[in-house]
Amino acid sequence: MTDIQTLKRQAAAEALKFVEPGMVLGLGTGSTASAFIELLAERLKTEDLDLTCVATSEQTKRFAEERGIRIADFNTIADVDLTIDGADEIDPQLNLLKGGGGALLREKIVAFASDRVIIIADASKYVEQLGEFPLPVEIVDFGVAATLAMIEAAAEDAGCQGSIALRRTASGEPFRTDGGHLIADCAFGSIPDPETLADLLDIVPGVVEHGLFLGIADDVFLAAPDGVRHYSAATDDEDED
Image (cartoon, rainbow, N blue to C red; front, side):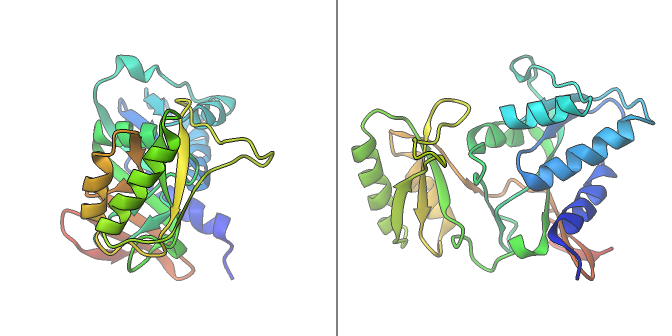
């Protein structure tokens, strides 16, 4: 049986083929994105690609720099040619649920600034309906109780129910994002209408961002023991390598 880490590297290897010299390249956050960064670092040892790389989290920045990849200041960059990132869940419409690592705000900013977004994952991340993985919602720490109540009400209006809890560290402290915000993890089990839920969460004042990435992925590479499947938003086709 092929182990998960091998599958992640296989998906990452497919995405690496799309990296071209001179690109502004967005580097995602998470274990699969890390597999891509490792392969990219190996390629840069033998090729001078003249890349400008931007990171979607401080964790990614450290990981890349430890492997010799220079990270540019994204505050000075308006456009990204290509971003490679992972996802916690991917549905048949290539909608994504992201944010398990807590980097959803920066990931979404970089993704929206990108001409092309490629998502890489092992096949276990492909689901018929988003929501089994708890949906992260990034919130400010003023009026937390009121914000959580509004998130719950928005979820009910979108047909979702389940527990909503603030994420905590292993030591029990509130988890903080790179921006200093809190994360509410929403265990809905299923999200029947992601578009409606996203719209409703967008108007909750205390919500900074949420982990629904809808219509953002241009390509998805899913690695399974029998090969890597390529899904394209442009053609709605599936190819197997």
